[in-house]
Length: 501
Ligand code: NAP
Ligand code: MG
Image (cartoon, rainbow, N blue to C red; front, side, top):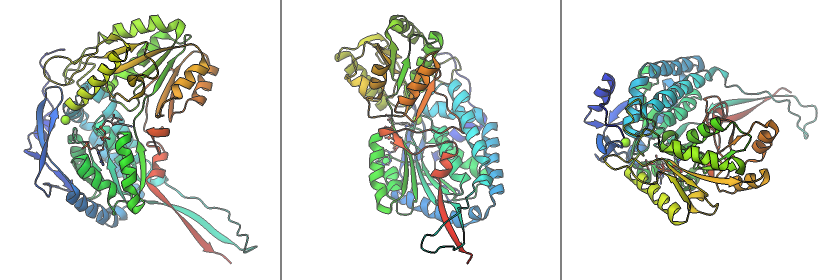
């Protein structure tokens, strides 16, 4: 842990953080919660309060939905696709110009290392606005050569139009606060929708600041409403709201299930990005140095708080002992501390609650007989730090092998054959991502074919792009974010028939 003096934050951020209360953003204006309530958001590296935030609930969600509905019909709905593109490109430019300040804000609110915020969260958020900034003029329909069996010889012009769905509710988690907001807002806006966004209670600040930046870029008032608040109040109000046409959710499978149930009231559409327990499979013929880096990227990026964490690492037996020793040795050398320090590779977990949850799973690992090879404890002192933790010789039925840990805890397993490892990799309720490391291209593609996951990486890990689809199978959810797939998520197809007879 380092205690080196930390860099001062960006002047724009200083000004933002000096606000007494970070208000809700509804209809283009900062407003207090109707209840007058606020909650504190905290810097997890120090445990100190960062600011007070208005706590939105059902009444504020009602106001936000009304503003979003009105905005659909207002200047936003009247903008040409080319005008919408211009606005989205302006968002990308402004965000890029303020990348340093936004990166610092997410580091302060979430704890993540600034080097990750600057190399990952920020450029990806900008790229999402640029990528989707190109879409509005390219969202087209089809003409279909129809044959109507009960009207032989009849002629019709039949065409389709992709229209905005309407008001979208977006409920996002705390692990990539700005990036999750950008990943939702960019395609939602590209398709001409309006939105009520609820950031996670642990990390509400960058979404609120982004909301203001959108207004500055020319997104009309009411198009993007940001309502921080608690899950069971603000989140649940969005899930069941009769005026919301679609909900996009990223978070736990458990909450996802609640949201699906609540969505039934008005048959709103839902897409779900949920948890994972992803396999990272290393064959003995792999480039071991690259595989070791892949194991690290898989499990220690963002303190292991990624839905795509490579938390189950299967290593072919001839390579097992050596790779396990290398992983355990390197884990002990990771530089942990306040993420604002650019030398830091691992920050704290997002909250005390999350730290304690991870520690209790680590204890389960120990008591159920897994071999602790590195870490396994909280770091003493302020902040919610946990040591990078490596368990070897884990058995498939142990709790740590089955439950999503969402922290820097990796389970290593030896394996002996392709069939065995594919079966074991697939025997989980989840199916978000998987990775395979081998120099044998046939083996790699056959494994990719057999792995039940929404994303498979071959000889790499944790690669994402605005243009490439993202999402899972099984209890990791359904629907795809990013790429052209998100355009389908946020549009509705209308079929038009013209009688030419
Ligand atoms: P969570 O409880 O599912 O929270 C995600 C979001 O849902 C937050 O905005 C949360 O609000 C809100 N929420 C909570 N209860 C709700 C309810 N009853 N109705 C509507 N919204 C509700 O997730 P978490 O416990 O904060 O995060 C940890 C877990 O999330 C992980 O273990 C992992 O499984 C999952 N996760 C998955 C991904 C992914 O990309 N697939 C990403 C991040 C996290 P509050 O902020 O008030 O809780
Ligand atoms: Mg916080």
